[in-house]
Length: 333
Ligand SMILES: CC(C)(COP(=O)(O)OP(=O)(O)OC[C@H]1O[C@@H](n2cnc3c(N)ncnc32)[C@H](O)[C@@H]1OP(=O)(O)O)[C@@H](O)C(=O)NCCC(=O)NCCS
Ligand SMILES: [Zn+2]
Image (cartoon, rainbow, N blue to C red; front, side):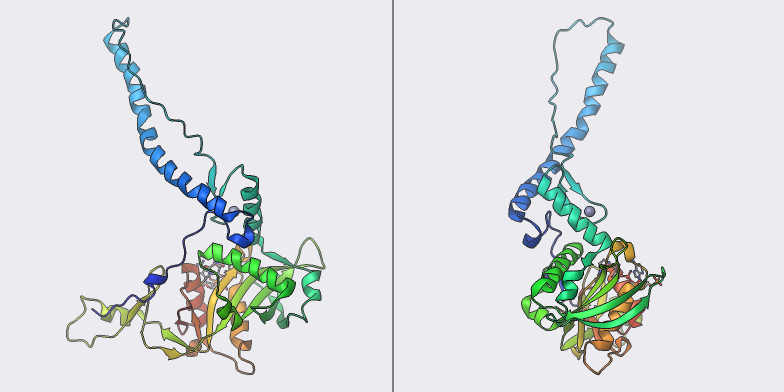
C-alpha cells in the first residue's frame, strides 16, 4: 500500500464560536462562555426528550383502570428547564456561532455576516492611500456573467496603513469562513493581495470588495494524481501492475498527489468571493490576474503546473479544476 497522509496533522482549525481578537472586544470571554454551554446542551437534550412519553402515558392508563382515584400514592416526575437552549445560534448564512441577546456578540455577527454576503467597502480613504500602499490596477472593465463590470487591484499583502488594516479584517473574515489559521507574517511578506472591486450601489464614490485572492511566492508543490493513477494504487488493483507512489493530501477534499516536490512559483493560500457574487466568474478572473501579473514580465500557466493551491475546500477544488484544467498542484502553506 503506497498511500501516505501528508496533511493530516495540519487540519484547518475548527470554527470558533466567536471571531478572533481583532474582531472582538472580549473573544476569550466569549469562547469560555460558549464551550461549556454547548456541552451542557448536549447533556440536557437526551433526558429531556424522553420525559414527555412517561408523562403522557400515565394519565391514560389511570383513566382506563379506575373511574375514581382510589390510591393516594403519587409519582413525581423530574422536570428540567433548558433555559439556555434558545440562546446559542449558528447562522446558516455565515456559519458563525454567537450568543443571541448578547449585544457584543450580536453586533460582531451582524458585521461578519454582512462581509461574508456582500463584501467590504473600498472607499475614498483607501483611494487616498493607494500610492503609499503601492496599489496597482491590474485589470479594468471586467464583465461578469450578471453584466456587472469591475476591476482588479493588487498590492503587497503586508502593506501597512489603512489599506493594511482593511486587508487584515478581510483576511479574518476569510479565515473564519474557511476555518483556517491566520497567515503568518512571513507568508504575508512574500504574498500579494488581489481584490475584485465593483461600484457600490448606494454611493458612486465607493466600491465593494467582492472577491480576494492571496498569491504567495513558493518554491515547490506536488502534482495531483489522475483518477486512473489513484485507481492503480488501490489495494485491490492487479498485483502485476507497477505500483505508483502516491501520497494522500487534504482528507477533506480527498485529493491524491505524487509526493515529488516539483519547482512551482505561485501558491494560492486563500481564495474567497462574497456569497452574493458567486458563480459569476469572480474567482476565475482573480486567479487569472494573479497568474498573469504575480511574476513581473512572466505570465504563469496553471495548465503547465506553475500554480498550486493549499488545502482546497470542495468549492475551491471545483474552481481549481475548472480554471486550471487539471494542471494545478497542491502545496503546504
Ligand atoms: C470557491 C469560491 C471562491 C468560488 O468563487 P466563484 O467566484 O463563485 O467561482 P467562479 O464563478 O469563478 O467559478 C468558476 C467555475 O468553478 C466551478 N465552481 C465554482 N464554484 C462551484 C461550486 N460551488 N460547485 C460546483 N462548481 C463550482 C464551476 O465550474 C464554475 O463555472 P460555472 O459557474 O460556469 O459552472 C467561492 O465559492 C467561495 O468563496 N467559497 C467559500 C470559500 C472557499 O471555499 N474558498 C476556496 C478556498 S480553496
Ligand atoms: Zn451570519
